[in-house]
Image 1 (cartoon, rainbow, N blue to C red):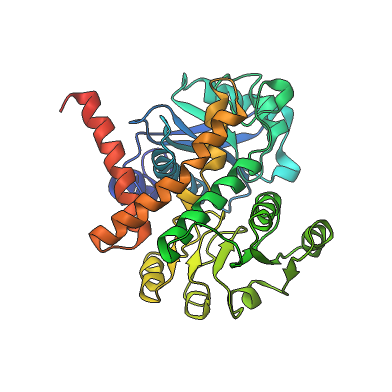
Image 2 (cartoon, rainbow, N blue to C red):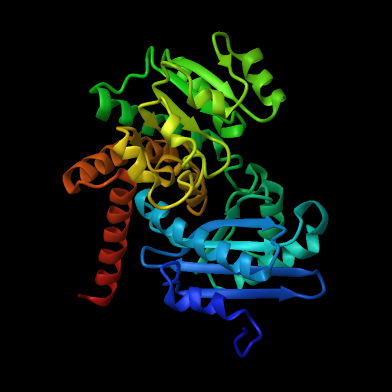
Length: 367
């Protein structure tokens, strides 16, 4: 079934009627000359211009691309609200294989599409897009972040993302054990790419015992060669079952916490950089029922978005680091709210974010 435009009717139903809906604006973009097909979704501008990355991905269908843009944009509203930024949530997806379809012409066409929104949406990197791509987009659109330092940007955001994860981990230790120190705690890091690699350094500097795993043997070897005292296990399956594990840090793909992993998890705390760690609704309750403290992923990994937002004001690393340090206090506030309301931390974080957005909307309308 399609609507009058020929688009699948379920897409419009998702936008206007479902729980995933409530978005302010969704823009379908096409540039025949370059082959660009993109979706820009603005979930909320209550706190300010929507901010979120551009994903370049070979979606199976256009409907799948729209659904992903809607979900990701909604997630950015909550992330930006909890990061204390004056930004709403937005996300864009470009449909195609970045290895095959990405061209300078396509990125410039995409830049013009973002520019046409007049600053309501600020873009950045995401899966399939990189700093060099944002430099191209920025030639057509001044509302572009995640650019290279040579072009006035902040470059790689993984340094501050890892620093924010570390702060959230300290807050988790403070809440659970009454002491923020990670000394002699055993921390398992799944995924030691850009963010995970920096996180390992923070943990070792504080005297934690670090165990790692990654699907890429070269990434594991790079960490083992660089740092003494780090140990590695074969895979995530082995890591989550490790005896004596205090903290589990998923720093790779989403869905790490699911019906198979939660029952066997030995760690008392889950605090990592990966997006969308909860495989489906209800997993946060399963964690709570097992007495496992979960630091909500979109709070934990906000260091990156704090960095790209700062670019709009002329990037200052120390200013960003000071903001990322506050992730410690935000995490503690979430745990306190969860305890007070008798709900899991993920639900508490959502409530705090929704409250901030609602207050901003009420302030705009004067009631």
